[in-house]
Structure formats: structure tokens, C-alpha cells
Image (cartoon, rainbow, N blue to C red; front, side, top):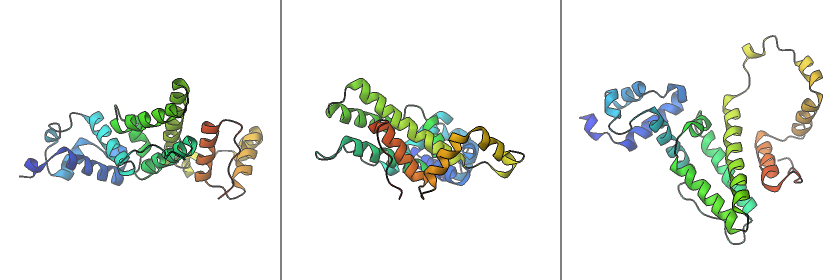
Length: 213
């Protein structure tokens, strides 16, 4: 019988496939049970509720990019290592529709806790006071999730822009528009923007943005 072969690993794998096909709003126990060929109550033997399912999906998404967690090498600057960690997290979230929403909605993710623990302990081990280390790591991780959340929402559709007066918007916000234009006119991308924002968080306001790719 299919139900006898059911286990948590198979449920989560199918849930990730459902996420890739329909996004987070499409991940329901009814649809998941149908894909697995079982009745919905059967799922609750393995995963008790939707919150637990979301957390399990989050763990699987992170595991794909972080099968192992390693501190920086002895000659590697913690700033460079932390930047690379954030870039890996962004790749993990972008690999699946609504990846950022999944991470933001997950509760008690052990993998995210492990990432935070390693990052904080690394900074403390390099002489950063605990309070500052926590604030740096918290800001980097939350910025990364928020950045990807905006990326995955996407640009406004035609209906949202219908009737929107861009000329009036630009006239009312000239510095905002000048900043956007200046940044991207040299061929920079959203990837460059992500790295440059990280630079400001990790190195401080005095950091100069990197060159365009």
C-alpha cells in the first residue's frame, strides 16, 4: 500500500516539488496528499500541521545550499566569509518560488539556527564583541531574506501601473530617481546591488561600492 511507504522525507520532497510548481500558496495538505496518493489525515502522522510542513520545507531548501557548514580558513577575512555566506543563502532562496517567504514563515528552523550560531561564533572568535556580532549577523541574515522577498515579488504588473504618473513620481522624488539611475547606468545589476548593500552592513557606511561587473 502507498501509505505504508510514506515517510517524512518523501512528504517533504513532494512538498518542495509542489512549491516549485505552484508557489507557497499552492502548498496545501489536500494537494500534497493527492500528489502522494494518500488521504490528508495520513500526513499528520508524520507532520502535525501546516507550520511544521513549512519549517520542514525551509530545512530542505537550506540543506541544498548548506549541506555542511564550515568556518572561514585561518587566512580568510571574516568579512569576506560572511559575505559569501549571505550570497549562498540568497542562492538557496532564489532556487525556489517563494523561497524567502518560506524561510520568513518557518518556525524554529534548525538549519537557520546553525547558520546563525556558526556566524556569530566565528565573529566572536575573531575578536568581535558578542553584542556587535549578534547585531551584524542578524542584520545580514534578515537583509538577505528581505532582499530576496522583494526580488521574488517581482516588478509591478500592468494593472498596478495603470494610471500611475511616473513623471510626477520622479518630480516628487528627484534624489531617489537620481540614485537609481546613477547606480544602474554603468551596467550594474541586482546582484551587484546585493553585494554593495552587504558591504555597507558588514564594513560600515565608509565602505565604497565595488566596481560594476
